[in-house]
Image 1 (cartoon, helix red, strand yellow):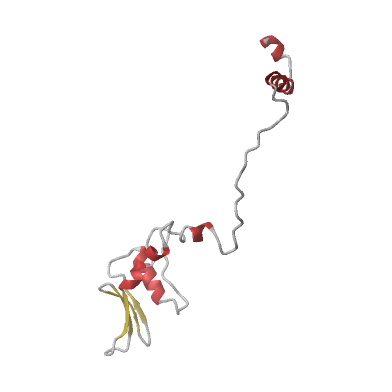
Image 2: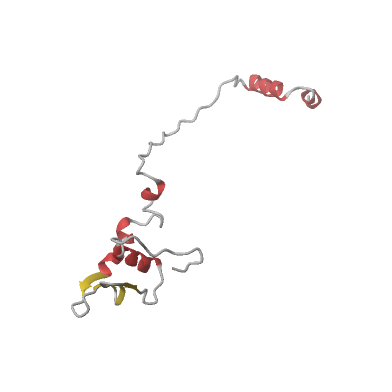
Length: 130
């Protein structure tokens, strides 16, 4: 029987196997759950909570409760304080930024939030520097 199969085509072997098992040409169909179409604003990143992953939005924004904005009466500057560090000082002629030695994503987000009314922001380079 093995030598006989060597002289047959693969299609003939499959057809003979189906006839022998009584399977014929029936195929088994799996039922699949249709995937809902996403809207243009619904992306995998938005469903996972943004580019940082699946953390809930509230957890990603928890740092905001540690931000204070005030006007310094002595200098006339607007000061944005994150915990105990003045991260942004906006004066009439200049803007001074300080990470206070905490060069992490949350500090950078806080600084960028304070700069949102301006046309620039602090970015991270490929080497990890700001």
